[in-house]
Image 1 (cartoon, helix red, strand yellow):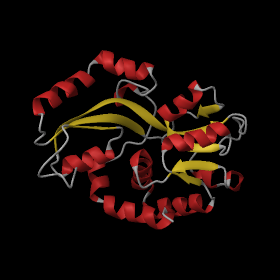
Image 2 (spheres, one colour; image 1 turned 30 degrees about the vertical axis):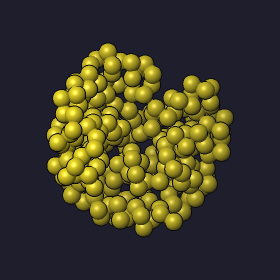
Image 3 (cartoon, helix red, strand yellow; image 1 turned 135 degrees about the horizontal axis):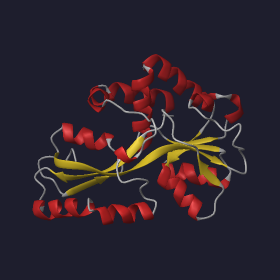
Length: 234
């Protein structure tokens, strides 16, 4: 989309998270965007491998020796995993966050291509613990897999679906009609029923979770991303 800025090819940008939508909006590539429903980032466990009592409750727990070689997560350079890690950096501060990232990397996690892959590894028991999205956990549960999401905490990230009309969209009127349609309560309800979403909005979730300052996060995006590449990209 950035490369096509002067000659956009698409009309709607339907993104499953918030960070990159805000990044494109800040560059003037989007005419309008809205948040529709929400999912969440979760710690998931294989219930055949991990009993609830010693299950990791915090992100700091994931650096403990007991989980060495037993954690799965998507490369934290993309998608919701990147957004989550960068939000944690904002809350913890760079020094503490880098120390945690390095300790997590030293614990030999499975670094995989996406959240669905991380959830599948936990479902199969190849990993005992995973960092993934709620809809990917639900997809494995529908198949009868022994996987469970741990409760939301202050370290969890809520992730709305975002839908945007591209600036100078070639079919602007149709794009706006689709934008309005996808916000209808009955459409959101169908997505919740299919477990593609957990709730109708961020405001519907009462648990204390991360509340990023997106403007500051975007301003420091290049620095945070460089740190992630240095630590996790091999």
